[in-house]
Length: 285
Image (cartoon, rainbow, N blue to C red; front, side, top):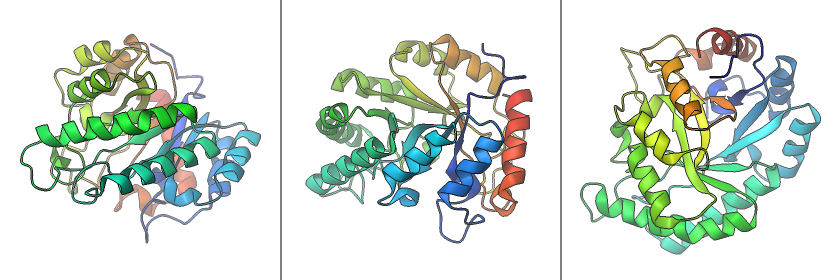
């Protein structure tokens, strides 16, 4: 397992950790200011959200690289299934637009949060078949743009409206069905810390299909399942054991801190948040 106690160049910021992804939250720093602050603290990479990028993908990507940061990824495609994704062609077109943004930014990975249970169906089985069909449609386009697609299973609490994909097992199953070499998975502590199958499924995914590892913590007394994530070390997830399992499966890429915390970390000065991330990454993760 990698030693981060004296080298945190594998640390990546997901900008949602500063509250910038939701209106009315965070300090409102520009992408340029976030880039500068990460570079000053020795972060190795950064991950943006589409709403921050707009039409400035090439400009922002070049700014990050000029400051010594790599772009680790882009969040995320629009939902591929569920109540917001009934029109198949519109879904495909919007997904391709997000792929174009990732390519312009220079992001090697575009994260997919698939969406909830599709209208007219029950359970998750039929919805997952729709996900596989639509991922299979966009994967060749992404390959042509040199973009990898990372399916991110979410905690089962989101199955109804945000992600019918709730286990790494199901994510790897979709990878097997689609069979695209640029399709893989993203492993987020918040969503998989509880899964007793995680080690076996990580081995099944292997180095060729693990495209990202996301850090945070699950608070024992979580008050809001969407907006009350913990900073690493403040919750009940076994962070070092999980990272060991991810790396034993072959992953050696960035470790991306992604914390949605409307009533705690998003209310703090972003500089303080970044400083705490560095300290916790070097000592806890």
